[in-house]
Length: 168
Image (cartoon, rainbow, N blue to C red; front, side):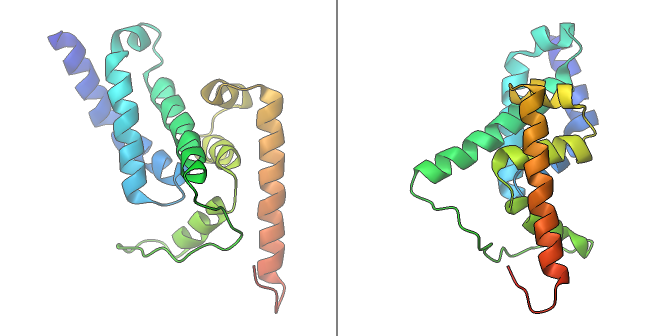
């Protein structure tokens, strides 16, 4: 049991910062939701640690849990009466960072949860379509469709922001 704990702690120490960055993107910049998402994923990973460690799939397992939980979180929030709109509310940012950060988070919020997950896993975590399909529990064709739709939305938003007098 001590060896298991040591290995898990070493994994968390080595990978938690990168996993938190992914979680933050999956939650479109919501730091508190990202921390909750990572904590939930690490709790589930700890329970399954001997099994996933034998397969050398620790990070993929945690990433998969986070991705699915982020999608489920949005579904649950929508079912509880929250309404998804085209308008993105202003979200206060409590820390300084690159000027592009808020814009990237706003663009990510414009995507559906699955589209956001595909874009984050593909372009931030640099996963293949097959790896994304495995993380999301869907086909590679579904991954391609979500990526295509997400890119179309992002192109539309990009074109609209570059056209004078057009706001979204």
